[in-house]
Structure formats: structure tokens, C-alpha cells
Image 1 (cartoon, rainbow, N blue to C red):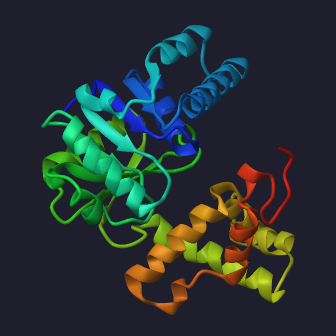
Image 2: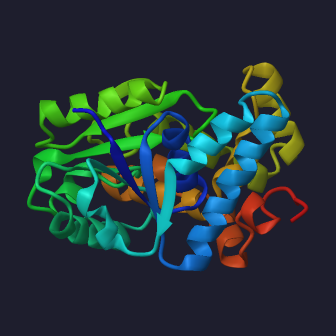
Amino acid sequence: MVVKKLFVVGSGAMGSGIAQTAATHGIQVIMNDISQEVVDKGYAKIKKSLEKAVTKNRMTEEEKETALGNLTVTVALEDAKDADFVIEAATENREIKLNIFAKLDQICKPEAILASNTSSIPITEIAAATKRPEQVVGTHFFNPVPAMKLLELIVGHVTSDETFKAAEDLGKVLDKVTVKSIDKGGFVVNRLIDPFINEAVFMLEEGVGTAEDIDNGCKFGLNHPMGPLALGDMIGWDVMLAVMEVLSAEYGDPKYRPAPLMRRMVRAGHLGVKTGRGVYTYNK
């Protein structure tokens, strides 16, 4: 299957990153969100990112204009009607995602593939909201999407081989390295990294080390590019909490219990980079 038209639901960090990556690889992309203000903000972020790439000689002005020419924005989910492939990158909320997929199932052409960028919600459950569960797959990209090479593909209980192959082929077009995971909570990457970040929050709360000490220990002792607390700030503690709650419910194992400090940060609105304050403080 050749994906000529891609529809992306969501224009936040992940949605805009997916849209930008596809547009720069020659795919016609429609990016959607709940309001014109929100989707215009996502478009502006993409434009700024491409302009920065030009100034750093990573692409030419002509390539930038071509990429922007491949991208349009909309607030109408109905504009997905002609898409070959749809990627949902909305907020990590079960009810919202199921509602989106039920609507997409009614809107999209019969042969269209529906994919979710979820980092924790079971693909089988998302697929069950449609009448085409064999054409639903997980496409878990990583932030920032244009720079991160990995694309984690998740097969639900009835995801067809053809659907997986189409997602894998799309990953190749986008110049991503793909890995395959069966549909178990957290999949491969998040099942490893999120409890790791969660444990770092437990350690911070217990006073085992300062945030800087914990992060530097991982950076220079484990050769990680950034520490777990800084990474949590970048991901967003609301997203981290949602994922840990899904893992806790999925496995019923206390090792997935969210750290109390994480809950308090979310309640306080200290979500990380996007709010200017998390474990660390940032200039907005």
C-alpha cells in the first residue's frame, strides 16, 4: 500500500511532529485539531522548525516550501474521508481516543487504515470501537518525531498482516527504524522507560539524591543522553501519570504504582517544559 494522503488527528508535539516528518518525505498531509487556534499553533511550530532547519543548512529553502506545500490544516474530522492512512495523536485519554476512532470509522473510506500514536492504551480496545478492527494498528512515534529514529508498531488481537505491512512500509518511507510489539500494556519502550522514570520520582521524593544527582547519575553512569527526571519534564507529567495508571490497571502489579510526588506535580499544574515548571523550572 502506498500512502499518498495522510490524515493526522492532533497538532500538539506529537501530531505536529508526525505531520512535519511526513510532509518532508513527500506525503500529502492534513493535520487536524479541535479549534483553528490550536491547529494554527501546530502549523506555526512546524514552519518554525523547518525555517530553523534551513538556517542550519539541513534543508534548502525550496525543500522547506515543498514540505509546507504538502501540509494543510483543518478543524473538520470529516476531511479524513479521502485519506489512505490516519494517525491519531490526541491526548492520552481512553474515552477521547475511542470516540475519535468511532467517528473515523464512519468517515474514512473502507480501505483506509486507522492508527493510534498511543503510548499505553491497548490497540485491541481502540480497534473494538470500529467495524474494521483488522485495519487498526499502533504507530508509536517518539518525541521529537523528526529527530527520533524509532517507530514502534503495535499489533492488536486481530490486526491483519496487511495492515502491519502497510504501517511498516510507511515507517520506511519516513526513514524510521521499526520494531514490532504485541498488544500488552506499555508495549516495548514505555514498559521499560516509564517505570524507570517513575522510580526516579520515588527516589527524589525519598531524598535519595537531588534531581541533578539522579539525572547526572544516569547520564554519566548509564550513558543516557538525558536524565529520567529531565525526560519526564519533556514528556509531561500528566502524560507520565496517565501511562503509569494504565500500566497499573493493566498488570495489577504494585511496581507500576505512580509515585505520589508525580500526582502532586500534576495537581499543581507543574507538568514540565510545556508549563514552565516540573521537576525543573523553565523559561516560557
